Image (cartoon, rainbow, N blue to C red; front, side, top):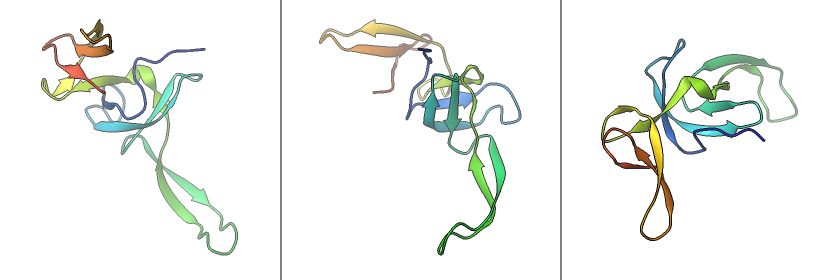
Length: 107
């Protein structure tokens, strides 16, 4: 099974493509395909037909998946995308740490 450097609910920055520089939260991570869906990034139009009684058709805007290699984990302290290292804390928890400033990223 493939492995990603980011996971669901991480805040990331897009580093390449039409949405370069945008920041958002990961809504879905798809490790098998190496893709992620980021909130407000790579928005596409979907033309849908009405399905059933209360589902209205039309043109819907939604986020599409983009390659996980095009995003970088965001450090709030550095205010930019950063590389991370993994460290074990005194209590035995494994955490991701910003390479530049040493701030703990994520949970």
